[in-house]
Length: 456
Image (tube, rainbow, N blue to C red; front, side, top):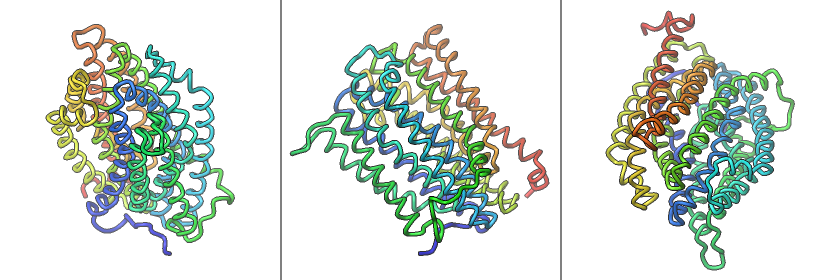
């Protein structure tokens, strides 16, 4: 079977971006749907169960930082090598990225399993039942961490090759399995015992394991990436170092973002388990925006990477402008969706009156930042494509850190209370979007490859 990589260095820019972005967006929504499916069924168990999964979810979220260590640089370098027509190098880069990701996954799993209790205790919920459910859920997920780690690495490599459809199809199979197993294992049926939050974790791990098997089959036996892919061959250590160097800034960005969110969650915990559940569900709903924007950002990263590798600098500029127009439209749409649809969106997952009231406040405040979030994420994709992962990471780290003093001030020193924490998130997101956009514009105006082509 012929390999399925797409040349993004020619043809319609909008068509190329959209054709790449739609499957990536679909894959992103599939990843989100895993969590939403869990939240939907766990919601019937009550706010404490939702809060428990929400707390454990921070350490699953933290795993993204370690995934980025291998995935980001691999995706960038594979796209650049593909654009330059060096497919042997692209294969070596893919092999290197998978091995790096596997090693990181095993190390992170061991850490979580051995230190799960003090990690959960950090949130100081004051509820032994919530802590127990969080611990049980987290251990089961940690045992299977190698599957989502490798699945994301495979997804990044396919995206770098310009083939975003295969990851979408494979991940869709996993979602269907998860949707079937969730109610069965959480609530029990027939000879299957009721497992509660543990059932949700088992369903997720099993589904991700199936996805891993499908990826491995497509790469190793169906030759979907390269004619002859061999995993256990010599890796280029200079490229391994380059991959890790590119992945380090977004990994730090993601890790600090999760750590800051954990501190914020501890501030929220002062108000009780219900606000924790509200933040968990609200962030899942809000992810409609960043999952959509991430789809276009990843597509833009692959597009820019291939064209940058092929020295097609005019197409890089035109592609960025086209993606920003799309990002602006998405941001405006999601702002209106979250603001005016806050109540019915939140009631899909939790129906307790107090939780719904708090959830409406959360979504309407966060709605004001959606446009700027789209701008930030899309511009980050352009930075990744040219191999400069630092600017977006620096901006994100700085303003995410500022969320903590802002949250403390707004929640404790003003009349806003809990809503002050939500305002700290919105305000920082606005600043991030503006600064990253201006920074990339500066790169276009001053970098030799681009500044002479801005009139095109």
